[in-house]
Image (tube, rainbow, N blue to C red):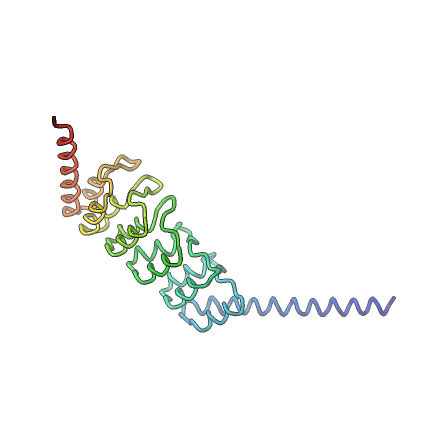
Length: 228
């Protein structure tokens, strides 16, 4: 009986030793991974991922690795993470922003195209990548998103549309593109504000003129349709 107990004790000791070693290795990998991301050390990150490290791991501030790489400007590492088959491309930061939304805000066309090709979400409730592209006036990204079936009149939580954001924060080219592509120029958000109001608040006379002219054209068409 004593011999059996000794054997069992040895087995438990060995198992505990393996568990301790595994935890130690895991802790080391975690530190290496999140040290490598800000430094854009692609080889280190790629090696850890190849060994089974989870690309969706969050740092000590609960920030997902994918978004950390983007925030730090570690774009090579970001690309490696984005291409990993197990990564969640639609993970959000504490402000509810996805990687594609942030790329559209910054005008990073190449990486935005990559995420779209990898099936990142374009349409979802609330703020969308199109809102963000319109906010910064990035017409190439606006067109790209629309070509990929982005909903042109997507509503933010308070009903604000991409056209409204373009009118206040973007530029006249972005406003014109959205109008040409069929954005509803008469919509109002929950505060009762229209694209005209947004352009006025943003002191954007060029955008204001475009929206007002589009409204006039719409009204003329309506009157013409009612004429006998």
